[in-house]
Length: 297
Image (tube, rainbow, N blue to C red; front, side, top):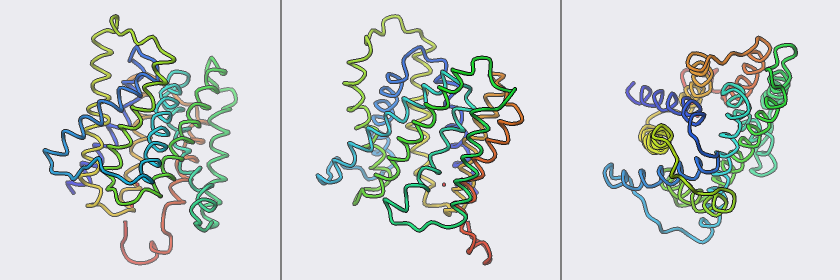
């Protein structure tokens, strides 16, 4: 029960990140850079306290994969944070949650996984849901162009997240904890020259609020959240993890509605349900559900 509670807390932390990012007076690439740097340093320090094994040693093969997956993680954050700026947190989150659908589409080709009729149904429902979220008829936001751009950024974030998930399948001899630290580090390393080339790097006028929120995003939403996540991951069954993971997008929508007064039209709500429902039904092991007991990220 304690493990489930901690996992729920982690999902609520992840779900609240949009509220903080929207109020940081920095570009999306700068926020992503500092998030990776602060988060990785926090986890490296925490690894000694919680006695989590961590080593910088890795094979050349893993090094290439870590660089690619770290870069994918960094640009995934950039596009997600840009999505928050152009559309509502709810729409950005729902479009970002298209990542499991991309995995379903690519897995048979890259991982040799079999397609099932259930996964096909999930993909179809997700695309219908996306159309409803992108083009909600008369309920479209005032600036429909920005709304569409925000959805596009959310889908790009999902695409980069998908590539990271698929690359992780080929990383060997590293624990999930070690892989995460290395990816956060490599994300920072890859993003630094990008930020250097595209931003002024003048933070003299950055306010206390932005500094505080950036610190929270780096320490709480990244360091603490990932540390807690890995502390309970092996204590929960796969089915339980999968079900509880939906607290993340649902809480993001609810918190945005309560705190930022963001609203969704009925058509968009239906679209959101279809997107989240599509990945949910594709993850459930229906054969095992017919047997007594069993549980799920």
